[in-house]
Amino acid sequence: MNRLQFCIGFLGGLAFAASPLSVHAQASPAAATRMDTASAVNMAGRLRMLSQRMVKAYLLLGQGIAADDARTILQGSINQFESELAALKTFQPTPMVRSALAKLEGAWPKCRALLSAAPGKAGATELYDANEALQQAAHSATLAYEQVNATPLDHLVSIAGRQRMLSQRMAKFYFYRTWGLHDDAADMELHLSRAHFTAVLIQIESSQLPSAQSKAGVARIRREWEPYQQLLFASREPAKMRGDAARVAELSERVLAATEELVAQLVAQAQAVPR
Image (cartoon, rainbow, N blue to C red; front, side, top):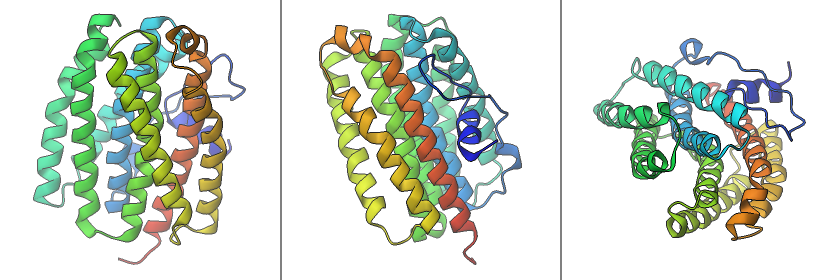
C-alpha cells in the first residue's frame, strides 16, 4: 500500500463514484501513536478537521449525494473522533490542556446525537451552531498542546493541520448552500475559509522549516487545491452548485489526503528533533 492509499484509507474510507482513487477503510492508529507534543498537536488538529468532515458527510447523506460513501465516512469519522479524543485524554501535560479537553469533551455529546440521527434539514440547522462550538473547542485544544513546548515545528504542524480542517469546512458550507440552509452565512464563511486556506498555504510554502520531502508535500497540496477552489467558486447558483456537488466532495477528499500526508511528514520531522 502506498502513502496516498494509507492516508485516504486512514481518513475513513470515502470513495466517490467519480473518483479514480481506490480507498480502503482502516482502523484508526490513535491507540498505537507515540504520544508527544507533536503527535498531540496533530491529533487535536485532526479533531478540528473531523468536526467539519462529519457535518459534510451528514449534509451529503441528507441530500442523497454519494449517499453510500457519505454514510461510510460519517460513521467512520464519528468513531475516529471518539478514539482520538480518548487517546488525547491519556496525555494532559498542563492545566491549559486539561481545561481545553474538558470543554471539548463537553461539546461532543450534542453533536454526536445530531449526527447519529437520520439526516434532515431541521437537524442540519441545529448542527450549524453546535458544530461551530465543537470546532472551536477542538481548535482551543490544539493551541493548548502547541503551547506545551511552543516550538516552531509544533506550530507548523498546527497550521498545516488547520488546512485539513479548512478543506472540509469549505465543503461543509458549500453543502449548506446546496440545501438552501444558512445561505448568506454559509457563503460568507466559505469565502473566509478560502482566504484563510490561501494565506496559510503561502505561509507554509515560504517557510524554511519543512524538509525537502515536506516541501514536495506542500507542492502537492497546491496542485490539488487549484481545481478544488475553482469548482467551489464556479457558481453561486444553488442549482449549478448541486450539479457540481459530487465532484466538490471528491476534490475535498483529495485536498484532505494531501494535507494529511504533509502533516504526517512534519510530525515525523518534529519527532526527530532532540527535546
